[in-house]
Image (cartoon, rainbow, N blue to C red; front, side):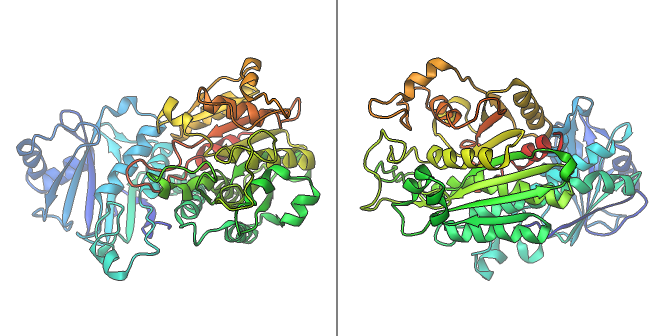
Length: 500
């Protein structure tokens, strides 16, 4: 749920009570505002730093409580390390680090004086810092009792009964900083929406409920339509329908259109997402360990919904269409749970290995998006394979593409936003892994190269000449710390779409 802390920019002369956050480079070498506070407190900051052996290393911090001579109840000195080498991701992470240090217990406001030892930082760096702070402030406590919230909200930011009410970033040009940050506010909202969707329990967010929430994007100016199972059957979506037939909840296709570039903007970019609201593995039942995370098997579709919200809120000058399949194990925007009607075989495209269902959901969605909208490029996102985590861990999402230019743009967008992508191979020789004895293809390629064989399967549903990229976000969609959603993919996709 959205961080309730209001973030704003103000001039350096503005001050107040609460918490003051200042910075120091390695040494420690205090920044100008830190030096000013040190002087006012007659060297207290320097003394505390020396006693605590604070050296100003990146991410370290030291606190001074109830400093004499100041209105602030607390001064927090945060280490910058060597900011001369900082990039966007460093400022983003610093914002998250600082937000994690603030609870609100010492006052309702935090005043942050972001600067280096040489003085001001750029408005772009301020915006990156602010983005990191707001993303870190997210918490999902919708189902906690009042007493549980009072005792701690679970996101490391302390007591929600005394939560931080506002965070003020003091800088040389508040107006310019606010203008640069404005598009990022939309990214925060989009990522928050994606996180909220993934964090909802599967008994609350089923395929139908997911589709209903996506329809709420109409308020932001997105055109939304929902296809029923009857409509999907007429379209011949046998793969998607096979996934959901083991569930008592019907599957859906949700189509979202944002026409920010207008008629002259040409063909849209299509973004497709897998929305399996809970994946037990079907007959190929998953092990009990980690089963609770399977509510996040719709993170790709959640990312698409969050992305469409962000594009609309930013009034992005781009034409984009989002297509998601919502289902449960063995369903698109549906659940995937075993039942007597679940497909038992594994060769035919309409009755397949039940724990390789996500690619079947995507297959129909990919073909539909291309056939109807004739997009200039297609990007799909999915928590598709555990194999990608074996290869890349949880730091990078897997990137597969048939187009070097599209791949390079997405990789650059990942670096710019801190959502790192790593390109993995595709090739005709891998097609042998999904050859079938009784059909054209099968939906699983066996033990080795599982992420690659899944991508090869998806590629069979991409029309010749269409630039396409597949992002396997199985490793990045959920935090390894607390199994909560990261909203992975929204920022990189928004950046990639906005640059055409």
